[in-house]
Amino acid sequence: MQGPIGGIKGVLLVDKVGRVAFSMGVCRDQRINALAEDKAWLDQARIKRLQPLNLDRVEYALLILHLGEGDLIVVSEAPGQAVLEFIGSVDFAYDLLDLLLSSPFEAMTVVDRRKRLVYLSPVHERFLGLKHGEGIGRPVREVIENTRIDRVVDTGRPEIGEIQKMKGIERVVSRIPIKRDGEVIGARGRILSPRGGGLAGPEVRTRKFNWRVSGDAEAPLGNCQSRASRNPRPH
Image (tube, rainbow, N blue to C red; front, side, top):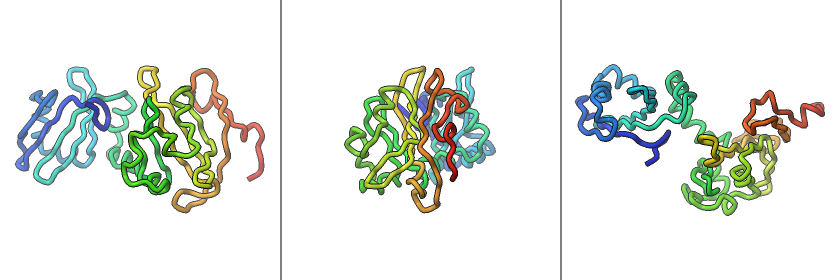
């Protein structure tokens, strides 16, 4: 079973008086119960909504949802140290993730290893004329015109600053493979802006970048060079 961050390892429910009413999986551990019943910890966790946890040298990520009559805590596998550091140091990590997923300026597409849509941001759904959730589960090429995100799944190589034409509008896009243990498990696409303007109005000047990547397809940007940087043109 997959949660918002990784495989779900436990669930715990705190009632309205602050006592654990239900727990399963790793949440049966008394140390997690003690944390959940600690009012100061729970008050802070409600604000952050995402919280890291190290238990017996195993890293977890906690999602805390206030339900009015109590609180639901979902414990998931932590996918990596970078994610743990992010949710541990950014008090508004949950809000930032929500913004990244729903921003009207940066439409997001996610496909799985079978090249089927698993997420399409609301602004992108509206642009494509889809009802919410209508494209989920369908082959991406059936839903998004002129996409190459399926090719990124095949090659495992990112495509950054490409121009993609949809519904007669040229948009600047990036397509990044998603890997786990070196294996491509999907890809993420982002629409950065139409050429000459943002999704919701602000103007952005941009160029198409043809990245030359040395070695690993996910090498640092310092190892990448764009055509624009080799042949500079006046703005």
